[in-house]
Length: 354
Image (cartoon, rainbow, N blue to C red; front, side, top):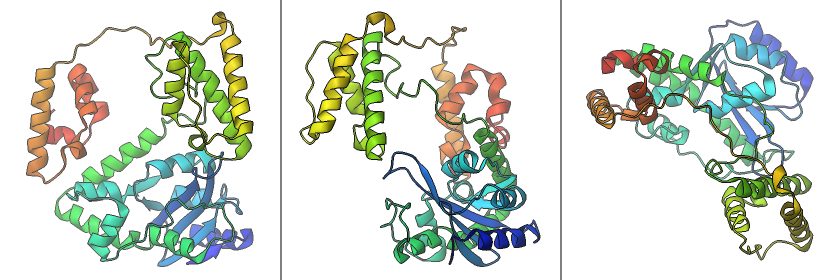
């Protein structure tokens, strides 16, 4: 694998690839760091193209021009690409034109273990090391061990994708695969970018009252400031459950215990934040978010049960997991509003006779 950190060399490769046949597949994976630093960082782009592998240093290089053009014009293969699509959109402003996901392909082929390492072992007969999964990918120079780990992320994608396409073709499921990946790309376009002023409303706050929300917001802002100061991800300061537990106790007038390992300076900022929260007038507390009221549709549990049974029988007949055809959430939405089936399902409609 060639490590590319020089912009001139990167541009040379990108120009070469852009001039090549656009039907040739481009295999891609990313490494981003959100485990060691406050800000998420796109660190590397692993590429396999034309039988050669490359590791682009995304910290040193500008990938927003030529690289983005390549991703828009080439058939793009990734594995489990939800997070990769987010990274492409956030850092490069790109939504791929033609995308394929080996994880979706593997599930449609009936694989029950469809993680990348499992597929490499099952199809290529190789066991991949996992010791660099949580490594700090912002470090430079990258150790050889990490470069090899990154190389493995794309090295086997051509072999895996070729075999899966052959199986899908044999099973007459290529159209299922294409529709599923198109739906994934369409969904990625709807994902909101960035953060908003209500980002402190973490999971678990929807049922909280105004007093509890007030403490959640205060503690969230304290945690965010501490994480930024220390250049650490927020969960290394305090996790979400701690925030919720502290807020619940404080709103009830109870004392809370500060973790023993908290250093004096951070303990001081924590206590200062609590005093500021306790002195804030009630009319400045945040309010619960009230969703617009609409007609409540009662879920027909009997109809849902029948649809799940039908799905499971169809899935068993085709050697698929039930959720590969439709998740319970999707089936609930269909039961509540049958007119939504066209927007929620594609090839699955014929299988389920909907």
